[in-house]
Length: 95
Image 1 (cartoon, rainbow, N blue to C red):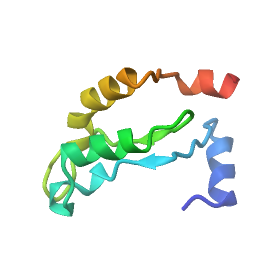
Image 2: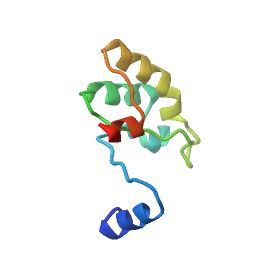
Image 3: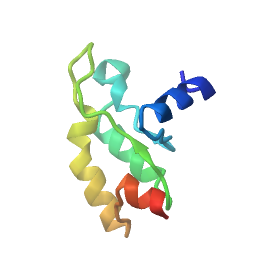
Image 4: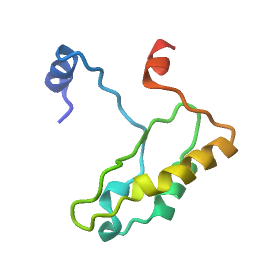
């Protein structure tokens, strides 16, 4: 859940909640019909300035695929080739 109560709790613990704008869906794994190519296409197809991409580097519990981690080098190179750069969350928050 991510309602006001949960956000307050997160902030009280000293964390800052950050939302995402693009979900790779790689967490669904190959058993969910996803592939490294679909992850790459989903990110590059949604690329606009300011996007925050949600990626999971762990494995899918059902099929043990690591689609997001496997796609990451291609995502980074594809975004850089399109002229994008990366910033840390601290830099983003600082404006």
